[in-house]
Amino acid sequence: MTTILVIYHSQGGNNKVMAEAVAQGARSIEDVEVILKDALDATLDDLIECDGLIIGSPEYFGYMSGATKDFFDRTYEAARGSVFRKPYSVFVNAGNDGTGALRSIERICLGYQFKKVYEPIVKPGEITRETLDACREMGQTIAAGCSAGIY
Picture (cartoon, rainbow, N blue to C red):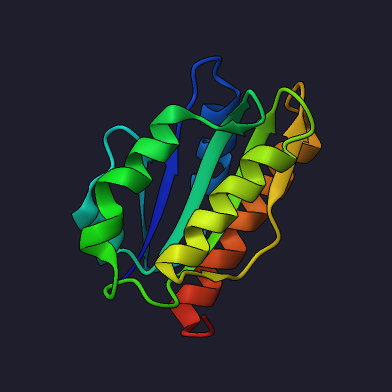
């Protein structure tokens, strides 16, 4: 069984909708379990035990949400060495252009030594049907790649 962890934070609801679409895509792959958690509820064990990770954050003041940063702060030291080359990707619902939030998440992921396996989704403003389709494709692709041992 392959496990995909989707963590997100959402105050306004957009990132939750995007996370649910990512999870739906990942669940469409046979023998894949999806753990969908708010970043505040995600644990070190969730991170270590998953086969792939998809991180969602809104952009606040040109940065990731505090809850997303909190997840990283709580898990970094203990996870180092246990998550080397773990496949990941990112989605961001942006108030501005999303580059600041994405850059900060990707910088932290370099510290964990994760392996980026799918181009990020950055969506400023309202969530569209195309955005949700892209999120489902992200989840499906990462789950299929992890399940097949490609990543």
